[in-house]
Length: 283
Ligand code: AMP
Image 1 (cartoon, rainbow, N blue to C red):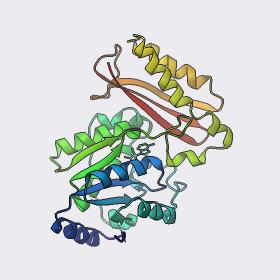
Image 2 (image 1 turned 45 degrees about the horizontal axis):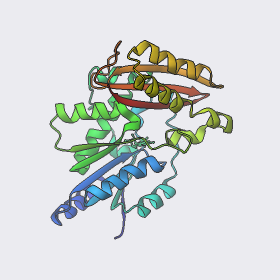
Image 3 (image 1 turned 90 degrees about the vertical axis):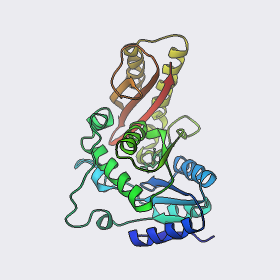
Image 4 (image 1 turned 120 degrees about the vertical axis):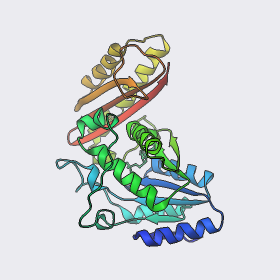
């Protein structure tokens, strides 16, 4: 099987039409490239569960704030294509920004409330850009199943809301967080960490593990758990806590006592590099 690398919408549509004519189901893995084992886990799930696997690689400008790292976001396209080829991807969609947002572009998707908290509070407009580009990708590819990572838990929650609210005919699959051997969640941004920062970066995961243990031992006070995270990050050289949150996994609203599905999430800065991680608990 040859892998197709395509930059225009018409050609994607034609390729997907041909796959459907062969009665293949279509899986979509949206990414911003700089692919690592986390992305590969989504590709493997898609390969396993669908007949025609599409990966999109697009560093979406509308989800970056003016002070954010759009320019320095890594774009190792050659490696990414090789990686896709190795993992049996059928089509890679690599659009130019002007293909996704041509002159005169006007339409944006907002998922009220869910977009404004946690990452959305720290990164105003971020989820408006995410929801918009994901709906565009859904409309361009029209996949049967789309694959997302639990690494971006709020993003997964927002896309679920978008799909439900706008009746988008796609099934969503959210795959577990893939980690380095020392627990650091894989991220394209990890490569910006200097060796000392990299050494201390597993603090996010260790804090979350400590929270998990406390909850297993019966702790139900969200404030205590937030303090566990804050203390762990405060004790980590070079780390600055952006937020540590314990929220209802459905509403993303802060809770005081743990019950039901709970999302524990944090964001930490190491110099100019911002890392996120999370844990979902069923209490
Ligand atoms: P990105 O390229 O960062 O936009 O990520 C593309 C997709 O890969 C998103 O659905 C992410 O949640 C997912 N992803 C990124 N890192 C990981 C990871 N460490 N484990 C699982 N999924 C991930």
